[in-house]
Length: 229
Image (cartoon, rainbow, N blue to C red):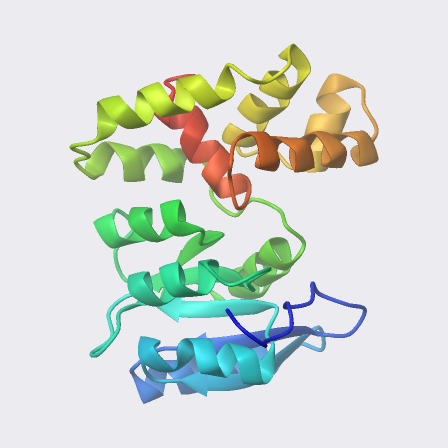
């Protein structure tokens, strides 16, 4: 990166959304669904992954809805490229398959979650709000299904790396990490552990640093890689 300014986190205004899909009908349908919400603002549409970085720099979205399969640069490569930017926007992968190898690779690269393309509008809007707020968007069942269905030749090395990273946590941090892996929100973790939400947020922030994770989804994947759930 060069002279570009860091991307800003969501502010008090509507959540800014960039739609990336090579199908004009899909882009149009998503735009129509999202513009019905007062809390969301579609700031742009892109038809290929190769255009995503420039579109993000121009429109500065908070959340990118990213199609996986596109002609010149697919969503996986575009996600990896965006996640190398300083403070990138949150990325939600769009797919037609819920056990897709590309989805798992995108999550490992830094995507905040994924949605099926036939997700109802209400659930789509809720998901965008969740990822914009930094919450997890994958249920434990979805994560387990992804890991179970995708053959991982590096499974043993991933397990060793996950266990090594987790060994550096305090007992409380490990407890919070497992709760994140179980798909629990900050509020649920706080209630369960008799902590304030602010304290849980502080724990999660330290977890992201110690576990070298971009977001809660990557923490959850580490927990599953380490066979703790």
